[in-house]
Amino acid sequence: MSNRSSSAEPKTNDHYRIAIMGPAGVGKSAIVNQFLYGKFQTDYKETVVDMHRGVFQLGDTKLTLELLDTAGAYTFPGMRRLAIATSDAFVLVYSQDKPESFEEVTKLRELILAERDTDRVSIVIVANKADCPARNRTKRQASVETESAIANIDWNHGFVSASAKTGINVVSIFEEILRLLSKEEHDVNAVLLRRLVFHSALTRKESISRSLKLKRRRLLGRSK
Image (cartoon, rainbow, N blue to C red; front, side, top):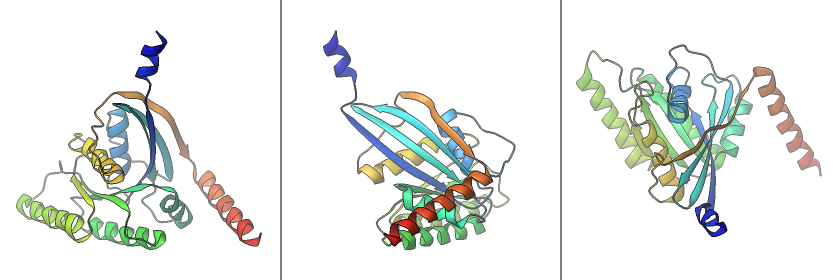
């Protein structure tokens, strides 16, 4: 009896924090909600910072993913720097119906590389809202193909065209990020042990408070 239970236990535990970043209104929160909870919310609510956690069983591995859903508005640079400093990987989201949002993602990528002081960072670029109708579908498809080439070839990052609304390729985003992190293929359609283990939504006041506390700790550490 004890042997059976021990054999069912994971042999390894992997734990990653993934920051979901991008300009406002491109569907960052929608991607997280679709991936973890299988739902799409039509009402838009501005995010300051949300932390979600999902636990998966992948063969002999227990995989914990912390998804840090960050603000699209750049009114909290301290929180953005904290997210960059503490995350293992990054999902940078832009919207296919807003061509200018890819330029914002480009700037975010440059900021991440500068803050981390290395170009060896696990990043997946996501072209969200693939479901949105386009007046010129051929032109948009060509644009996405160009952006995919930039991400894959020029930047050596992952790239996924997805729709948070319909769920198309949402799982592929996190399979790609795990491939970059572990250099192995993962199927995150595997058994989800606990769909929601932990979720906290930080208010603006809490976000600012945490940012100030971090700055105080850094200052105290330098003074010692």
